[in-house]
Image (cartoon, rainbow, N blue to C red; front, top):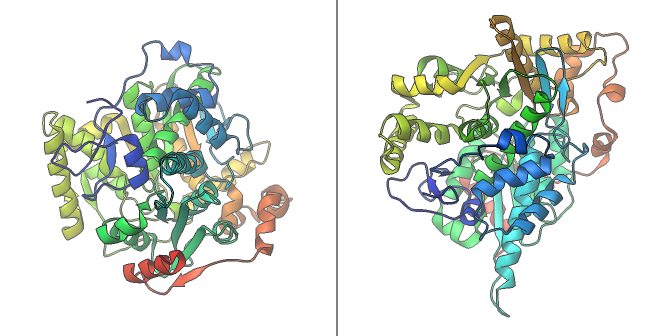
Length: 503
């Protein structure tokens, strides 16, 4: 099968979809996630021919392997990429910063909302507009226009990145659900102060998992979908995973210009989307030694890697931590990795059987709160991945350590701190020289309470002066637009969407 054709993780029937369909629908009709069943291989000479490419040039080469030129011609794809990354504050888009001789930070927060999700969602927003414009240009007079109603859940950064990627886009309405009181004040201000009429924020009294469950239920409601054409911006949308692959290649080449040798990527992980992009890069041929999952105390991924049991821990529930974007019970994107592991190690390469097995595991998870993967699946996962768990105290201590030991008094956010602490632990155990690239996922200004808790005792430290960008300072003066949903109810959320769209 060509890598430009996509299938669902849960299907036992070979229904194929185009890239456009995958982007515009987000979640497959059977509740699964879209993926390319065959991961393309890189050109044999890519280490030489790609090493001096810009971020945009690399993005084009990678995306071209996944998107059929008949769907998006070369010039159009180059223009989409150029427009998507022209909004970033760094000309490198995702610059690499050296912390010490073994550890480098990949700064992913130079986009419009100061979070790594801008890398994908600026591109996804332009894709939505591109496909809708093309579809509607073929309509006759009086024919109803194609629209998309984007519905997403956020634990903080996805929402603002989606809103900034979609604000003002013609024929696009965006509804973002977030858990009341469980995101930072700046994250809430970024979402709720946007004045564009196509943007709507719904504050839901519940957890992020409640919000995500509501979104998945809305996708599963065929009648609602048929009328409002619901689309996804969460990392269930394949285009997000695709766009994020670029910075693994870009940072690898930037590091190779400074030092040769083995490279490991350390990724703060909640929904597994960011590190899944690294998995695709690895399977395509990027010579990474390991991908290391860094979790907070909501550690379902770390527990799976150590035991093979994928369990919600429902009796405990979601723990509110200092790294709230990772406060989840279930990592939605993990099933994409599981599909490949099942297909290659359980069903003998049979795509349809892989979908059937995974569907059974997902039913067990829904009904029993857990499933246990065969040992050979776990062992194959460990070939590529390793993991660790970082608690709140270690998160605070690492923010202090980086600030106090760096000549520039470098300030990191709590999610980045989880990655750096994990990196330090692995570096201490290494028996050979290995370089680490730890992904810095958000600007520290977005998490003022935690950053101040860590640094307020240092002489001369000032959050206003040292951390907070002028652009974010202005948000508190703007009027907020929020609709409160007083319980995690799918019917109340659907009614809120209907009330705003009024058709």
